[in-house]
Length: 95
Image 1 (cartoon, helix red, strand yellow):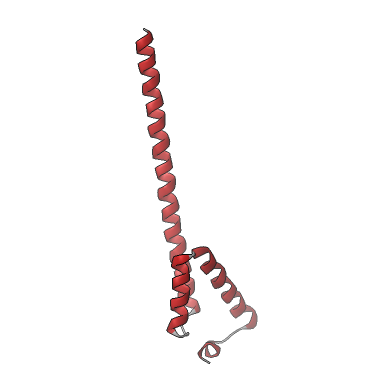
Image 2 (tube, rainbow, N blue to C red):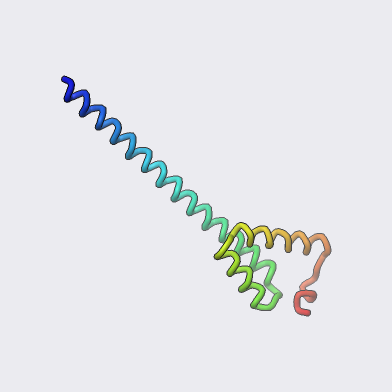
């Protein structure tokens, strides 16, 4: 009787550990997917910001995106806000 109870408890603990590991892996997968989606969204921002800029500006923002997506997003949001607030036209970027 005692041995059977210990085996059952061990089995339950093992099942719980496996379930927790599966949930953690799902969280990691979801986080990775959201990072990919976020990076794609930031890439779209970079593309819209730099459509009439010189290539090196786009390259700089893409490098920043690879190194630190959060900072790249902040900079893109700032540039977009400046474009909207001051109604910056594309020809300004070329000069």
